[in-house]
Length: 332
Image (cartoon, rainbow, N blue to C red; front, side, top):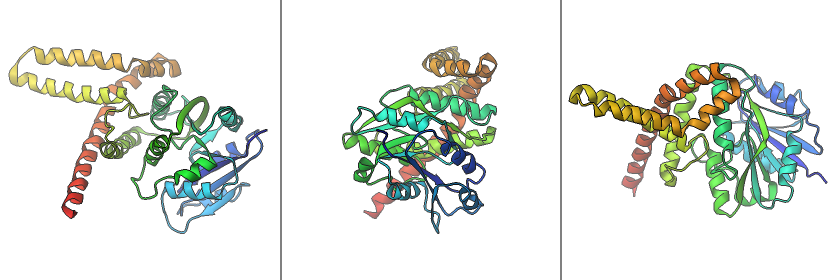
């Protein structure tokens, strides 16, 4: 017998995307299910768009953040299983059936999915991001965390957990939530059959801005959680090797004119080879998804430009973390 699934979707100024999201999820062949959209005090015409669909709408009077929106939707849900997605995600007609199947024979687990390899929009930077996330999130059956763009959890477990942290960093609340659930003894499992197609609409600058913002908050959380070197989703060991290799290569190249020592050229070469070796599976994923003419520029972007944004975000995140720590110490 199928379990009742509640699909919970937070929305903030997503009028250009939420209609596509709701059209897809309401076309699901699975029964029974409900859709709950929590509008986080949008200032665009999101409410008007959402109101045209047969779903439950919860409206906030003041902007409160995605965590509070998800918690409100979960509390209002009637399902045995809560399936969290984002307002810019497109599910397949059988996605909910795959969620139900993933729970068969599983007790006390949290099930995660990821993005499809190819996104809803076909720009180079959107495609790069979707492949990168798909590879990073699905490479381990038992991940470090499960992202809320595709997270399924039994309602009884969600209620016991206390929900997502509402007084927290602006993003990565799903990372803290996943870590807390794991400390409570729950297993996190990834199911590669549960995929949502994401609407990125990424340009060059949006791609770099996203990398900067994610790394800024990620390192602040990782420092406080003391898991800076962990292999955690998109904050993978491959990405960390890529960024560190990039800046060490720059350092050696800058030092060469000063010391005129040939070893300062050998080290960049060795680091480049090591970096390519460590990231070979991701680079292969670029190739398998879109072929050689995509894989080449994607690999160059990943190794030569992307580390700048990630490194800059990490640097400012470290500064902010230690500044906050110093302020907390002085108050004590």
